Amino acid sequence: MKKITEAEKAALNTRTLSRQGNVRTLITQLEVKEILLIEPKDWTWKSAVPSQLCRTIERATNRKFVCEKVLSAPGGWTVTRIS
Image 1: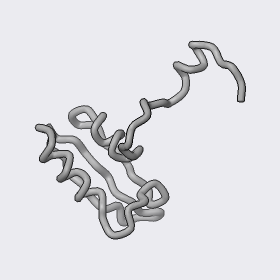
Image 2: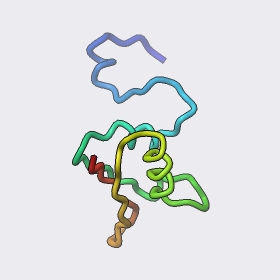
Image 3: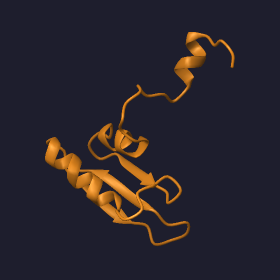
């Protein structure tokens, strides 16, 4: 543990504490036409895929997403915000 300066804090990738997971937070922060690659090691839901999470976020907001499966190694999914 150590003290850091404001400049060092600004260089860190942080988010406020909440009950939301990292993937949900990153999906909700996407701007239009931005793409997020979700790797299998980042996805911890056992019986679901990111498209289910995207549909939940779509119902709660006015955002629309396209989820696609990555077929090449190491696999994963891409999420693109379309509106």
